[in-house]
Amino acid sequence: MKNNATPLISVIIPVYNGEKTIRQTIESVLNQTYTNLELIVINDGSRDLTLNVICSIKDYRLKVFSYDNAGVCMSRNRGIERARGQFISFLNADDTWTRDKLEAQLKALEANPQASVAYSWVDYIDEYGEFIRDGNHITINGDAYEQLLIQNVLENGSNPLIRRQALINTGTFNELLTLAEDWDMWLRLAKRYDFVTVPRPQVLYRASSRSVSTNVLKMEKACLKFIEQAYNCAPKSLQKLKRKSLASLYHYLTFKSLESPSGQKNGAIAIKFLANAIWNDLSVIIQWQTMSEALFKICMVFLLPPQQYQILKIKLKTRFLRRQKVMG
Image (cartoon, rainbow, N blue to C red; front, top):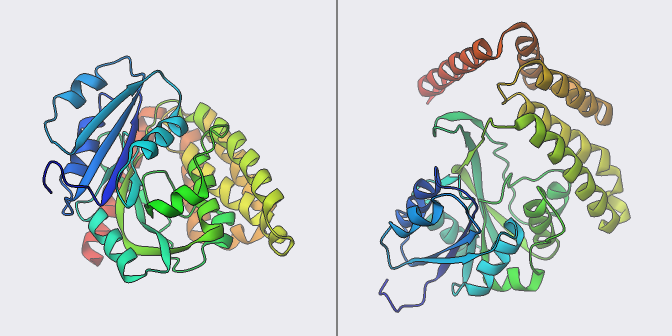
């Protein structure tokens, strides 16, 4: 792509105090196999060295705009206003993509002109970029509304490639929402447009262990508020799915709370979340692999000191990776 050419894809990264991860995140975009893109970074009032790090990266496709702190929704909306591409994608400032993410999603949309949103599977990494666990790896081709009502299939805000016109027709990110704003956007898109899946993990979501016990409680509150709003707008025929949505949320929060090294406090939170998942959907009990994993981790949180619990998690992760390598 020449310097003055119009990009086909616009990538938008909102960042606030992201000096530790922003370089890796930006490079995962600039090193994509698909190159006809622009990268719009919205510096959302960062007070650390984020801006210095960004400005040290020399690539004509990179454009930086700084504002006073206003939050991720406003930052994404500001990026959309400046985007020139026919397709738009978003990336959180601490997540990364595989090198073929944009190319694969663009091919999926070109091969499925009836679809306006392409998404990939997600895997989870830690603060050091090491693999933690697989995401949901759910495939939906066509109408995604019902499944997105039950759970955020895309899992985070770093996933989809969206036709620009579909995004404009759907409207901006809801600035009144926190921690569920991406789920809200994907659900609103699904009301009007078909989705298509690239069935392989191409989005690497960074799960930070800092203040997880506080974050999961905030996440619970925000997602409960969103689920209530979503079902207020859903047709009567889908109201029966509400408890399934709640069970899915608490299933996710159970494992999210166990990612923290903070010990018994998070074990207690995990027990509460697991009980809520079972209360809303008894079928959770027969998901033996997931259930046994959750109960085992909860027991270890209570029995082991935080440092030993982290060592155990590393050992289990190493064993899992070895097994996957053998099976692969």
